[in-house]
Image: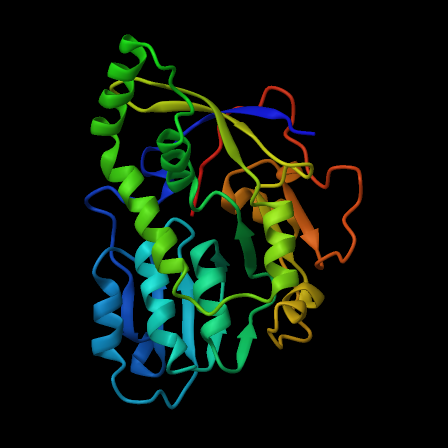
Length: 281
């Protein structure tokens, strides 16, 4: 059973940053005592990370990655880390592309208490949109509708291309275990677009999810261990704290371990009247 939600999409699906966003601080941290990547990661900064940390790190790499960083660039950093496996110290938040690309690429991992670790399911929504458009969905076959489709593709080409490239980069990451990937697909990854409209300022989407209707998974220590991350003693942020950071209602977050058998009842639900949420990779 699916349920449609109407969503007002953020320009760039939460991924393409506006000019003027402050770059991440990459290098040695306060008083030049530890290696760190702190702040909002922008396009081009994966190369800066590789150039800055050429020599093997003698101390853990501190990560404080802003949730609305450039997802493609964070994923490129994860690809760079896969061959090096640095020890990591994660603080504040590591969500979406940070959780998927950086955490599995670390060696020993330490996570500060209350850090928001969250896996999302909206990262490739633009690529899903392209898949549906290529299959003939979302616009009818009549001449007027096809002309509208052409205008949409022309106007939002950069956003769709961004998401398609992100999907390609994520495919180059070390895969999750089959049970973990199946769990993520079932709980947060079953979204499809059922209706699309657009204007000069942006576009509106109606979305249908699978049974569980979750936008985010907030794993506890057991959940991270099930993903192969040895972080015993991890004290996760509360669902309320995660919802505030991610700018979504608490009800669209599942918090806890991976479940071997998913319940018949949905794990999440969208509160009545709530239509606006960020679609973050």
